[in-house]
Length: 574
Image (tube, rainbow, N blue to C red; front, side, top):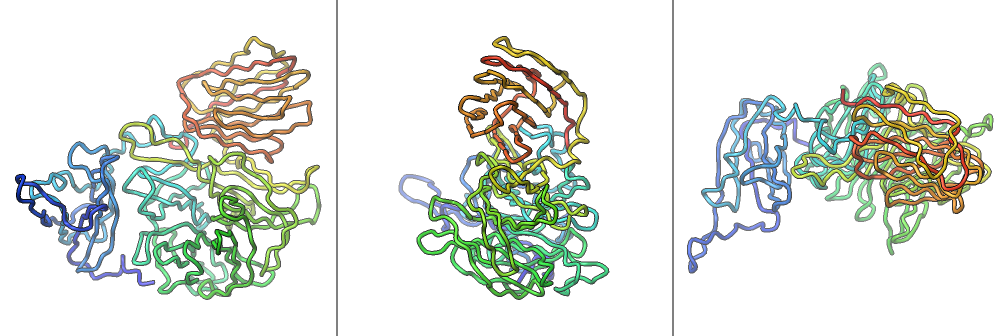
């Protein structure tokens, strides 16, 4: 690809705003008889600070912002540009052009337009004091400082850090302007956002993909002593698969040609892994074929730059979204079966297949298995290169974080979980549980044992406004249902019909008929619930009032609370 953002001889920066809905100039009425075309308005300033702060007014018409250096377009975004009283400011990094002249031009605005007067520069985050303290900000779930996020991308451990890239709109609280945002962590719990890793280029916005460490330097991007991090992604104007690499975990250079040309319109989300038996790389790519047939295409490469198709596998058709977008592929040992290993292929909605993989084709043994009970958790991906050899997953937690007036961020990520394969009565199944590191958030603990439950609610009260972890074991005995009221959110287990209902979500949860064991993690943004040794996973997006510091448990019919452990959890931002 011709990626010029960091390689252009820098002199003059031109920023052009164009109303998205009207690519031509707008009309400005000076009287009832003579419409006058509004001309481009320009303003020249010197780039002196790190960020250009762009005023955003949620809900107004988006305008097109184009940025040029010496006539070359290097940034372009759609933005709800505020004329007055901005809800928040988006931060555009202009440090590459420090000391250069910036020319700002807004097309289709009247000469007295106010947008220019609200644009400013800063070396500091002027909203830093409020960051991570907002009323709808999850305290145990990652979310970007500003803007929208969706799919996790490029998950990889590199140079002592876990790298979480993600689909990011830095300039609005709704989907658009797809960049790769970037956050890093030492422990999979506390995350630090470090800026945009990949910007849209002439091939289009940057859609989802994956990341690896090229330890053998097959690409030549690094060396065996200092291997490169290599990420793959979809460029969504031309639907090609691109490659970029980094030698420091922060700055990326793109391959100057597509790694995989377009197969069909919309093909996307390359997942790349190292296949040790044949010393090669494998890419899995979602491709929609005729009649909306979902397929996964498998490619092989010796160098991460040149790829050839080896096989395809078919999924669902149309609204049957089995094997639809955001593939993942990995091998895991089967717990309790010494020496046994199986391969797993997953897609965005959490449905998966278990089988074998020979380096060219996946051969399913069991298909259409369910690992996620709601669609509030989507597009999950696993990390490559975990130093402990674990298979760790993070998914997009589709939270309801856009309802507060003036919100400058939207959406979240799920808790990092460790995946395992376990043998059950129904077959080999995926299990997930929060990573061991998550326990470091535990604070004050409350414990209760052997409490007879009935129609009168058993209350538990807390101190402080904190997220909580709940570990509960209930002897069902002769109960018809169990109701837990957790900070105002009802969690109801119907023992007769074997269903668990949380807010508006309901899922089948079979037990042995004797005991119900639940692990629950409660944040402002919702609950993540695990049961049946992690085979059952029910994430529920619902806004929770942390000021409600009460839990109560009641039973319709005879039951006993065998054990209840509740932990107040510390914020990941502190």
